[in-house]
Length: 240
Image (cartoon, rainbow, N blue to C red; front, side, top):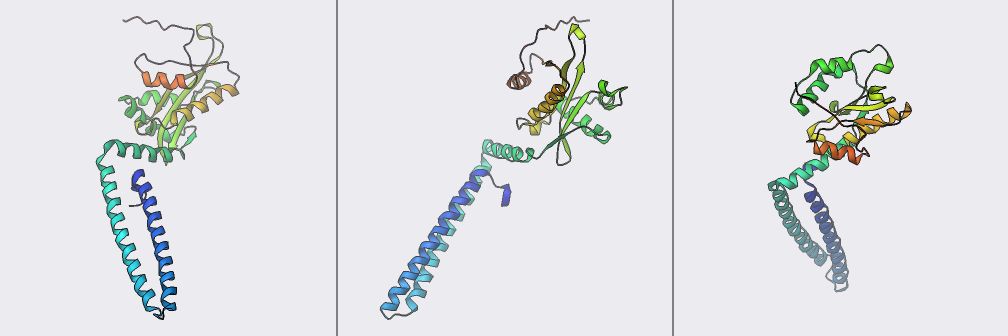
């Protein structure tokens, strides 16, 4: 079945192959030994050929049993949804290692809009056209990084430098960080954030900030794991 097998089946296949190979080696040694004994007894090569036939039958029988066991094991894996999901996650993790992080291009607009719609449930073409549009100066352009895998955009980060808001010196801000649901918990968000942190460090900024909703437990856990802590401000809001 090639690489579409689940990991337990592949592991079993390797072990079974080793067992069959060992059995074949033992059978060959027995045949050689019996051949030597037969020649000493004057039986010639007939006994050796007979022994080889018997040993070959034994190996064939053993291989048949092992093939049935492998099919049974693979069927059990296919019936276990949790095991299948773990297998798919491992495969995606191996594939994600080849993803690259890069700046956006004009032709990425539609893919970014589509990813945002999948993640948030709402398409915002105007917002993204503004973000990707030209700014008066390079300093005012937002930081945007994309994670791309096999030509598909699977992650987006947007950041910017804000100066003197709330009496703060120039500070880095992460305003958008999203990853395709099919590729989460595989290091894509970490790689995007690492790019942003390097970007802000190179500009000599003292700190980086972001905002997280109280209900976004996964997002809060992610930023906490990346070294973020509660800041010096409290957000205030009034309904209109």
